[in-house]
Image 1 (cartoon, rainbow, N blue to C red):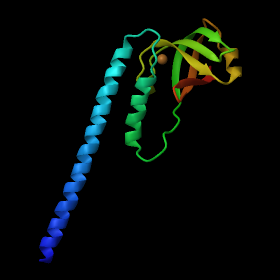
Image 2 (cartoon, helix red, strand yellow; image 1 turned 120 degrees about the vertical axis):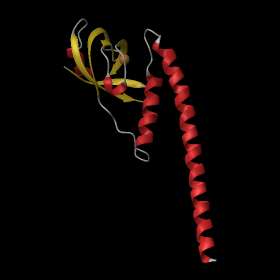
Image 3 (cartoon, rainbow, N blue to C red; image 1 turned 90 degrees about the vertical axis):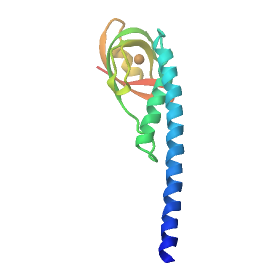
Length: 144
Ligand SMILES: [Cu+2]
């Protein structure tokens, strides 16, 4: 009798955890598919907004480190300064591929909060930058 109770308890436990695992997996799949599509659509755009692609990446990373707050990652890129607007605090860079973000080469604008960085952001100059993502902005944190 005791054995039967134990067995059925194990059965109940394993079935319910299986169901949870399955529903969790399904949700992730749907979200990934949807975001992938948006990513693909954006790839054709010229001055593209990669924030949605980045969100997808964040979600994937969130899955890996469940329960912990997302870490601020520093990304590195090499590019040529195309335009600067120090009053708005933006720089447009034609940058090469960014491995950490799986970005292709592109021209896009970044936010610059540290105004001293504009000393090194001169149109036509080749620079090595480090940047972070904050909400939907990419903020340059270092220029070399
Ligand atoms: Cu970019």
